[in-house]
Amino acid sequence: MNKTLYIVSIVLLLVSCKEVNNKKVDIAISKQTDSVAQQIIQVAEFKGQQVTGVTVTDSGRIFVNFPRWRKGVVNSVIEITADNQKKSYPNADWNSWEIGETVVDNKFVGVQSVVAFENRVYVLDTRSQLFENVLNAPRIFVFDLTTNDLIRTYILDKNSYHPDSYVNDLRVDKNNKKIYFTDSGHAGLIVLDIDSGKSKRILDNHKSTSAEMSYLTFGDKQWKNTIHSDGIALDTQNNRLFYHALTGYSLYSINTNSFQIENENQIEENVKFEAKTAAPDGMIFDKAGNLYFADLENNKIQYRKPDGSVHTLIEGNTIKWADTFSIYNNYLYFTNSRINEVSENISNMTFTLNKIKLPSN
Image (cartoon, rainbow, N blue to C red; front, side, top):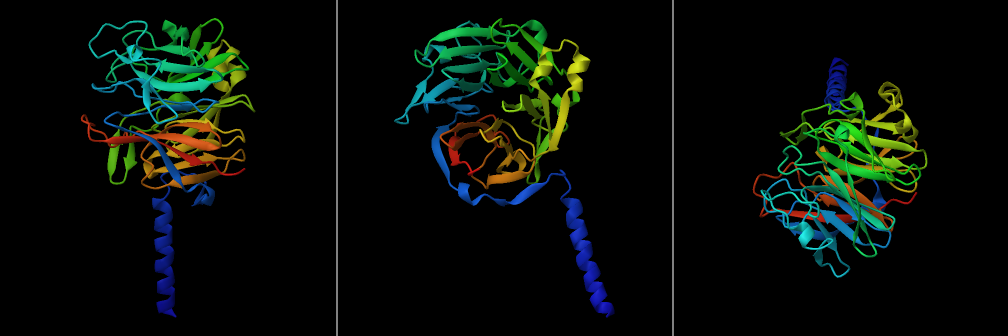
């Protein structure tokens, strides 16, 4: 009898220890990976060129971008054509700027994100090189997808960014005629009026836009960086903007009507803590209201349903820092930017663009 009680006590102790060790982030996550979405399809690969952003237009055109985090960036933006050619977009001249050259109005400097919306593609140029301070005001180049001509340039107002800002990602809000941005270099959000081109900064150094950690953990290694508000996603059904620090585990949202308020304290009152999640990079909503994001530390792509439950879409070594997402024809497109793996020399590394079928809703 005493021997049996001893064995039971040991088992309970081991279970208890396991529960404590697994409490790094208190998140309710389905342990079963969706069986309908197991096959990852590689769309393109890039040797020695670190891809981050991807966007797919309503007609299926694919664009990706490469930030200027080091020397040797061949193109800032390319289009992957139907016959799998990689074409400088909108042309080679726009992509010809090199570190050390004079900054000009009609060349990309440091593109961090590309977003297609309706018949336009928005190219977010941080105007930053090598993670240094901005060379001049961050801006958004808007190209017409029919003609591929530049039709407008939005230049952020001085009071909406800091010298150490790294404007990271954007979402276009057609209903409110606004564009929203995250700033991962200096915690905050930026709101731009589409018609006037005026921009303003909100939630500057706010808890919800600030990093919670100074590192992420990959196996037995720490990736040491402090990255603030990064992922951003617009819930058009409920008029809420969701955002997340990269080095952090908290998902927040705010009603888009709050951006009309001039008083910063009142804006802050409208911030809502949504949930604890894994540490992600980019985020995106599908039409059913599911929010897709990566679990960077565990090589996963997950999604949060409208009821708040979190599920794993896919996991494994083919997920290598799933960076940015785009949805087209019931497929989730994502880039593997391998940020935690890179060193100064990436000439022998391969980065990929992939797609995976979405679960049925």
